[in-house]
Amino acid sequence: MFVSKQLRVWLVASIAPLALVACSEGGQSTPPPVSRPVKLFVVEGSSADSVRTFPGRVDAAQRAELSFRVPGRVKEILVKEGSAVRQGQVLARLDPSDYEIILEDREAGYNNAARNFERGRDLIAKGNISQTDFDNMEAQYRSTSAALSQAKKDLEYTVLKAPFSGRVAQRAVENFEEVMAKQTVFWLHNIDLLDVIIDLPESVVRSVSVNVPDEVSLGDSPKLRPVRAWATFEGRPEQAFQLTPREITTKADSQTRTYRATFTMQAPDNFAVLPGMTTSVKLDLSSLLGPTTAKWVPVRAVQADSGLEPRVWVLDPASMTVAAREIAIGRMSGDMIEVTAGLAGGEEVVSVGAPYLAEGMQVTRMKMTEQAQPRPGDPS
Image (cartoon, rainbow, N blue to C red; front, side):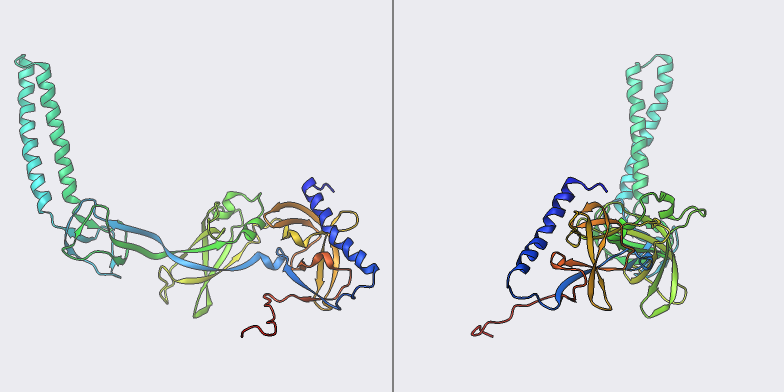
């Protein structure tokens, strides 16, 4: 088996504690304790690990922040928070007075330029004006035409309409309030279709086979086995709602180091599920796991035997004893190392205290936290 130079140096270093233990046993030192405390790590990747449960959050699949495209004073707000609206329905209006005046001015300028342009056509044909004068008339006509079109659009923009059917989730302004262009006025959600978002940890993403086609993760092809997922909600655990995979990020969050996965579901008919609520998502990853999925364990759990072959100490929970098991190792990722053979998944291996163990040694589970005992005379 090929072992990289880096791993071989590390394996050699892991033998040093064993040599020290052997030397100390030759003297008359204090005998070791009957049972040695160790910290254990549960190996992921067993068949049961293909179905995982994650906390999820709900959002509207179709959502938008609505705003006026022009500034002005709010004249009318025609809907309330929570109101159901249909596509094209008027939600609010700005005072149009200023824009009506601008439109009237632009119309006058356009009409004058249009008349001059028409007269210029006759004059240029008879040779009574120069080509330069006619070009200026045409440019003025086109400029005023564009200004008129913009003025008409600005007047239309004083009316805010719903781009799709849904519910007004929140309102951010009041009547007679001055608003800026692009300032959010409403949050509109369509909650007939919901997004369910979960964060996948690095350990789960690492377990996914790298040879799975993109279509599997999206669930678009009936010939492939898409990811199966269900959502349940607090108070109604007996109801499970089928989720449809939508997308998954391939860049980890800078803070949590997780990958966001988004699913969609139809809104329940018998109770309300709103954006911002929480859910529990059961995810079946069996279609994405390879037939020989690699396992990952802490680097410090892997030790070397006398032949520099890697091994781990596996716990027998019935007798609370440990036994060495030879493994094959692969790549390293941070403080984790890939085990390509030797572990089936679900085993408990020693992650802290492994250099001081022997075959069949009795161990105890190390407490998660330890506190120093107070010394005599210390203030209480």
